Image (tube, rainbow, N blue to C red; front, top):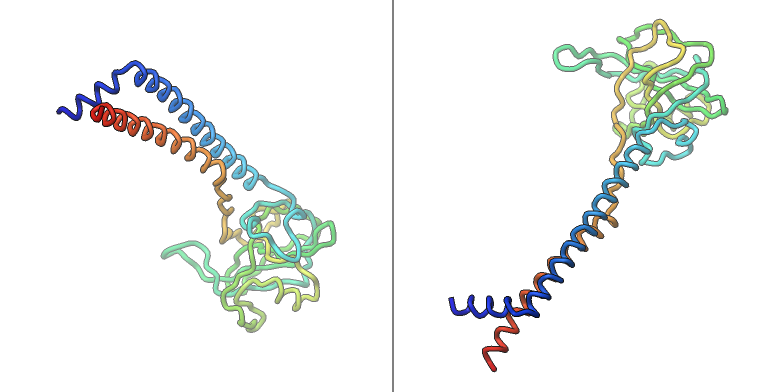
Length: 245
């Protein structure tokens, strides 16, 4: 009790009260500075997420090597299919659970209006099922995907491939394909008997967290705690010195 009284006595001294009021002001300032940086962190994160979700032209992301940050990006592309360059990818499911059906994916060579080529997964069909391919120019809305990396050494059997690999298809078709492939979400004009659209394997990747602004926010709050700790330490030391005197 005596120890508490001496600390209270020191705290109630005019100079201690003035310092305490200044400390409160400093802590409030540091709190709002930290909150400001935290809000900036969230704003930057939301802006980057919105940018990553924006639909862009396929020309902006396709090339010899895909940027992993573009995996899952939705793009639009205009061009036409080469009906002589088609690959069937075997043992692919449509639906889920007890209603799942085993079939094939249809992958076609798509020539953009810029002259570039990219493999396009048009969708799913039953084993050896038929489908239609538009002969005129179409506009695709599609999702960027990386090459499938499993079964890397697999070979085609009876014209059916195990995975989608643009390097393998480039060799088979005799064209230079962009890295990765596109998964069709929609075609315009729509084909009357197009393969059934399949969901992309990789959705848009999470954007990088803006650590710099986050650490700035935490830094201001740590400063506030440090100022409080210094004040408490000052009260304790002043009380002890008064006892010594």
